[in-house]
View 1 (cartoon, helix red, strand yellow):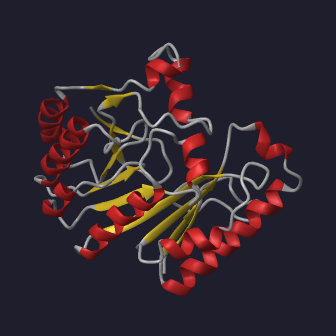
View 2 (cartoon, rainbow, N blue to C red; view 1 turned 180 degrees about the vertical axis):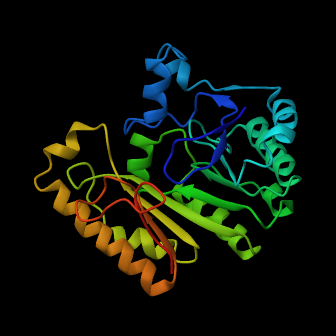
Length: 259
C-alpha cells in the first residue's frame, strides 16, 4: 500500500482506491494508465471507485519496515483521498494519515473534493491542498463533473489555513484559451492565503497544441505565477515541461522557488 513514487515532488504515496468518481475529462492521466494496464475496462468503471477496505491494516503492517526510509507520504497520485460524496473514502484517508503521523512522518493530501473537518484533529506536520484550475462552474461541470464546486474547495482549504495548517494549491492541468477564456490572476487572488502553489500545463490534449504559440502562453503564465508567489512570500513549484525557459532543479523536475 505504501510505495515510492516517481512523481517529481513526491516521496512515498498511498493510493487506496481504484478509480475516481470525479470523472475528469482533461483527460485524466490516472485513468489513461489504469485503462492501459487493464485495471479498469472503461470510463464508466473508472467512475465507480472501489475502496481497499483493508488499506489501513496494510499501512499498519508496512510502516514498521519502511518508517526509516520515508520522508513524507502523499495521498494520492492515482485517485482522490477526499472524493466528493464518498464519506467512507474520506474517513479511511484520515485514519491512514493518523496512523502515518504516529511514526512522526508528515503527510500531504490533494483533493478536488471538500477537505473534511476531521482533519482539524490531525497533526500540524501535515499539509493539505486542493486542485484549482478555474473559477468557472460551467467548465467544472464539463471537465470535472463529479467534483466539489470551486467555492467549496477553496472554503474548506481556507478553514484549514485558519486552523494553523500548511495549505497549498495545484493549478494543474491549466488549459489554454481555446478551451476556456479566463484570467489566471483571479484564480491566484482567490488563494493568496496558501503556503505553496504548484503550476503545470495541460498535457495529453490535442487542443493545446492547436492553440497558436501555446508555449509562449505557458511561459507568460509561469512568469505571472512566479511573480505572484514572490510578492506574497509563497513557495512556488513549476512542473517540469511547463515552461521552455526553465530547467529542472537539482532535486529532479520542475522549478522550485522557495520564498
